[in-house]
Image (cartoon, rainbow, N blue to C red):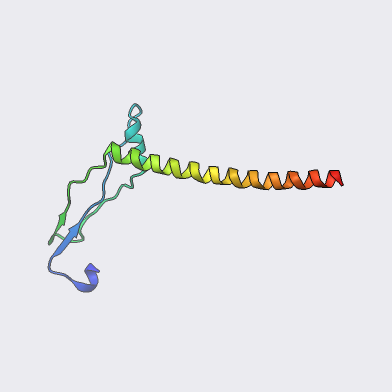
Length: 101
């Protein structure tokens, strides 16, 4: 876009978040890095500015997201178990009926 339009001035906005490298003794830094994508945001010219709001990912937010994901995974597994139980009960009843005939 820069080469095609030749703008006089560029205003960019960077809302990405680069977490510091994880440490062995800090579980939260390891989890934050698992969910972060490190990016480099540079302008292609000197005539511009990048607006960078101060964003911080809190440990509370990460734990909330992880809890929701865990709860969703557990509900999906519970649903699969209920389906499996229903199929096995139906199969068992059919076998029992055939053996009685």
